[in-house]
Amino acid sequence: MWFRRLCLVGALLAAAVIVLGAWVRLTDAGLGCPDWPGCYGHIYPQADHPFTKALHEMIHRYFASSLGVIVASLLVWAVWRRKDAGQPVALVVVLAALVCVQAALGRSTVTLLLIPLVVTSHLLGGLTTLGLLCWLSLDPPREPLIAREIRLRPFALAALVILILQIALGGWTSTNYAAVACPDLPTCRQSWWPPMDYRNAFILWRGLNINYEGGVLADPARVAIHFTHRLGALVAGITLTTLGIAAALRAQRRRLRVAGGMLAAAVLLQISLGISTVHWGVPLPLATLHNAGAALLVVCMVVLLRALWPSAPADMLPLRGGHGTQ
Image 1 (cartoon, rainbow, N blue to C red):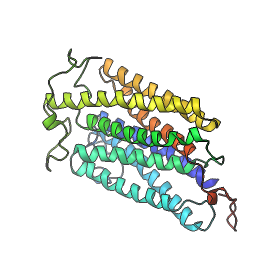
Image 2: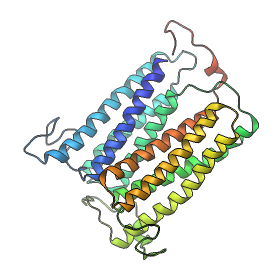
Image 3: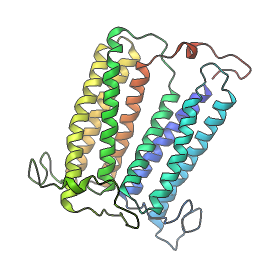
Image 4: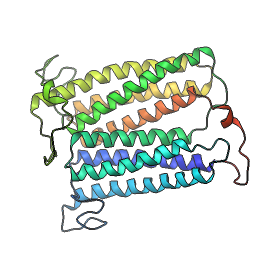
């Protein structure tokens, strides 16, 4: 019980870290503190430096450090109670390793001057951390699935892959400062197929000692990135909405029906945020909420996947031993 509660606290904190990371990126504060883990050699921003940007960056780091403490606590708990029935251990070890990788990526984001590949990987790592914490916080379903629910599993896994690819596209769009490349809807620069440079749009590595703040790509390459993100949103939106509606209508168990409805609603919300962000010229609050919407989609997807995979027999046994209940 307490393990899952601590995972839930970690998931909430991970969501906050993701939103704060988006805020830092969108306010061009990613290099507000040019060193790591401190800021100009201090653990807090100094008034004699660009204070606002440094404050944004350090608040993000404080939240990320707190998340690291929680994950470390979960690892200690899992190892200590590894003999308890139903206590996850391997997944917690994976989570702890991922957070260590995230710390390294966070440092590289600053020291390598916002290289898009590193920043996008950092975003994907943060969302993966959120997904793992959500999975660990959920009680496994106890009832077996019926046949039509089991048939949703391959569809759900395919939808998960599509969601990951779309989030990666969104991260690539943001880190290459391509969000404003197409200022109109539904066309892009008053064209259904504008001039685009795909040759340079998706080069993952462009070398070191380049300051990527503000972006380094020419306009046609940014248009190609933004346009591809729109096409991906169409594919992901149709796929995830269809999955959510199918789960809501075909599932027998209430938990799975609710998860399907949540997923469909989250997709519609995210599409609305994306359209509004472009329509209003990428204002900071809407752009930040669009990033939060991606985190919400991950949470809803994890809830649905957990409902589709009932617990193994060992997980259904009551916990025994001197440590009480989980």
